[in-house]
Length: 230
Image (tube, rainbow, N blue to C red):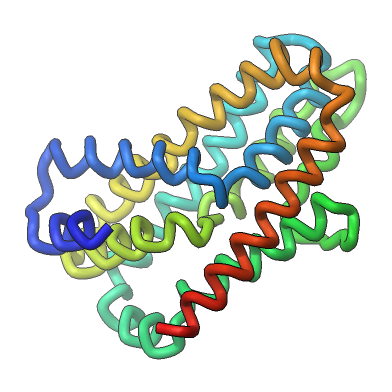
């Protein structure tokens, strides 16, 4: 991660930069810390698609589009205001304790211990006679555009630092969009497999959610401890 950080900070904007950001977006979505989001997203798509792979892909596309909208706006903000806010983020270690807390809360929700009103994969359909879930998926994707996990903190911090130091709103927006599209690749695969595999393994759904919940809580606690020990 240190090599990635120094590469993004010292390197200029080029095609290779966008390729790297796209790849790390994919990596961010396959790390163990992101498992709760993938598990909830898979269940959400499975319910909303009603066995249709085309509908599953439509829900995933709209969810990813919502993420892209947020990422684009975030890229503009990081580019315009990032140099002023980076010292504040570093001083209060915001990227150290906020993502682990989200993971712990997400894990508790997966285990059924709590139920909170933050973005939740609960209502994929509006009415049975409509093509359901598309607008809802888009709205749900908006807040998830900035959901990161403790495992991806070095990647995310390197990216926003790079955007802030470059100070280009256009490239900031495009880089954050590219990062979200990388995560979108994994979400699309989850949407596909939620139809072809998850439906066949539905009897294991509760166990998978519980395992994901325990993993999320454990990783959140570990990263909180490690973060504050530094």
